[in-house]
Length: 120
Image (cartoon, rainbow, N blue to C red; front, side, top):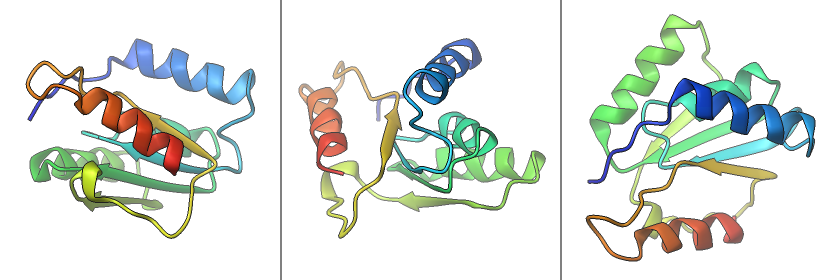
């Protein structure tokens, strides 16, 4: 598993831009593909998203996401343990956020994340 944490600075800039320049967070359903410890999902929730679902293949990362949500008293984000390659949702999100793997361990995984985001 390729793990690259999203820095708080990068997360805040990305979400601020999505929220203020594109109106893609407030009252929107948001999917977080490869959510890791949940920094993007949590940021979206704090910015007023209506629905948040984080997906990750790493159970330890999802445990960290739950701990982070609990610390902030957030109980409205759903986290799903799954391989992003296997998701086939019957619905789509208004917005997908992610810090995808760069493909250093598995060639092409970065492209797959982007394609999945475009599908959902």
